[in-house]
Length: 260
Image 1 (cartoon, rainbow, N blue to C red):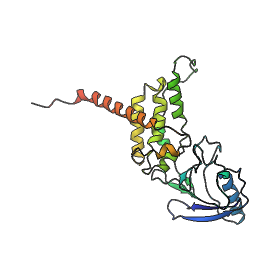
Image 2: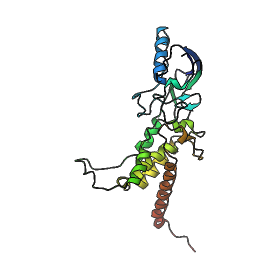
Image 3: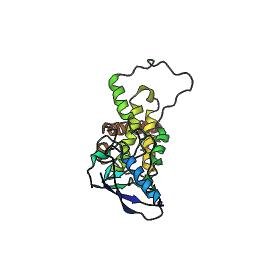
Image 4: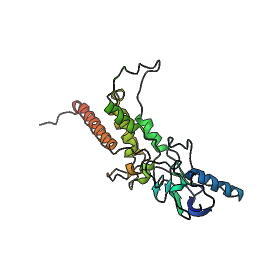
């Protein structure tokens, strides 16, 4: 099959970019989108031109680094599928595909289809962990976890941090990502000691990274390749609200009474 790839080319964030059309012949329908780009880059390199820059690592849909927009949809038209898993058989002969990077102020462009997603790492560093003493691993059944709680925590833990939720959201919000990380640990007994601090710190860092506000449109979960449920946003809001209320209650004794 033959395809036309209309790809956003930009040397760096300080230089202007533009779409460039490339004809790709002999596309195997069983190729992945990234393999198709590999074939295109071989042709471009043979012509002595700069290849298209795109990010990838595992090519198995578990690292979250390969994401970009395909015809205006994060990771492409197939639900629960990353760009590296997207097969070319989902497109038809002669079709034109528009490839462009994530568009969000919190994701500055590095080159072509590659953006800097460090803002998501900063949110994790702010509290997406539990503090434990190092040493021998505890026995697996020391802390019982009910199946329903375990299932909900694992559903949230499936987030790979690709940023598709941010790219799909009209507000460029990272609430689904942050909610997944807060819910994953906040639902488990091991995450309870730091639950309040985690919620406050991660939400504060999310706001500091210039992500937009959530207006409950739901495009984030529709674009998510791991189908993270909207429930995690409700958990984020609940944990954040409870932590804020406790923080204010702790400060009340420090506030001097108003003179009568």
